[in-house]
Image 1 (cartoon, one colour):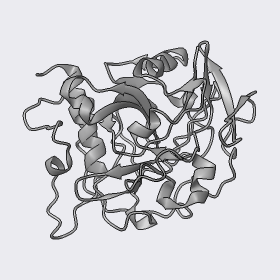
Image 2 (cartoon, rainbow, N blue to C red):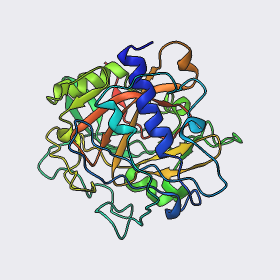
Image 3 (tube, rainbow, N blue to C red):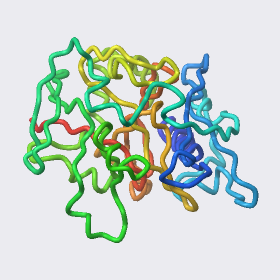
Image 4 (spheres, rainbow, N blue to C red):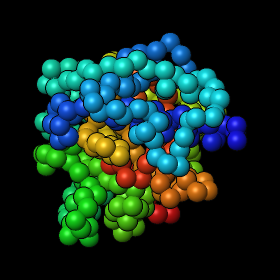
Length: 309
């Protein structure tokens, strides 16, 4: 019960669920939460947990998925840093804080010194930059393909940030895990958890435990990150802080633009948690760490496709 994997899954899942419990109207700037505070610990306190509105009555445990509960686990450092954040109701407009702007033209934050490859999605003719890292060819941009297959569904499964189509043009689309599984073009696929771990090793990141990696700045874009969180983008991966679409039992909205990149893996969580949780790779503006851990499948995250071998 006290294995690091299970404890880590609880801690980081709690971090993402609790921090997404924002106030305000989904689809607007008021529904957005910025994560911009640095920490001296191994993992920065990278997100602020908004305080519930009066009468809302939501607690951290209530927004956790039924399969994830922190009630009886001893959470070790440095994972505890994710849960020790103070309540904060701060909101921001992208035009007034930080350096991330959705209206920035596509490619604004690319590495000007890197020779990108390219691929064309035959479904819509969209051309994406690519990069080869450790023998694998990766998309160097977030996928922006409209889910035609799911368009007729009454349940929305992909989004542009704040539900503004123009935001997909600069930062790609956000997909639930189920859609992400099938959304890459032919000849490309969603990366596995092992693919993300291999990528991190190739760029020189150090694994500190099963989920935490130190040294992610080589994957981040050279500009666009708040809190002086820009990277060096040595390998042309050009990760953008495109944020996420969150869903809890009582709320949904958009959060973390400008500060966090969250990208799906195809690998599901272990055991019974596989019904609701899958892996992702997470980068933050407040530190040089990467996280490879689980998050709820119903959230909307970015997609980077890797070429079939």
